[in-house]
View 1 (cartoon, helix red, strand yellow):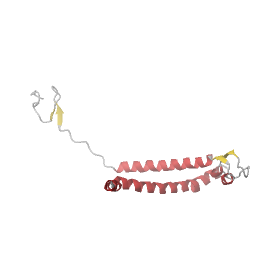
View 2 (cartoon, one colour):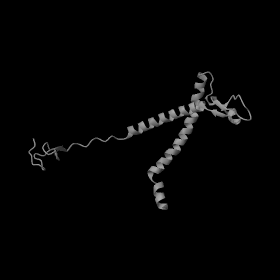
View 3 (cartoon, one colour):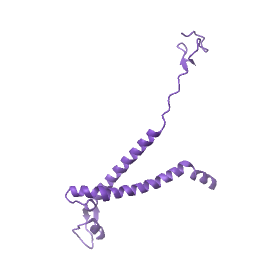
View 4 (cartoon, helix red, strand yellow):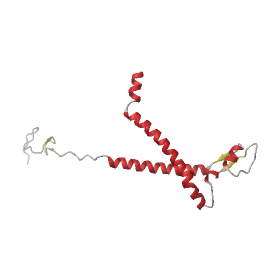
Length: 148
């Protein structure tokens, strides 16, 4: 059983998948930072100084501090139940960027693949019995019909 596991774990596809998952996790972290720290601040500034991380709705106030809460961190510290739609917007933009990057990666990989040319035609069908015969044949070997 140990040898079978070793064969499975050391297959090229499994190792490639593991590397892809690790790089994908790192890429996700970079994209999350890019969206949260580079994309969203200018968008928030254009919308009148809105900070998307602090866009939330209080569903139930906290026990220790009933609010109002200026920031999401204040609401969470007070134990309030919140609907964090600003964080959702940020994560949606992150997903769109990752999906777009993966699309271009796959498109690039597909363009690098060599396109196989179709094999040259070397046979034809007999018009009488529909048997596959060589192109140069003058008579069908199956039905012995003469071919033009």
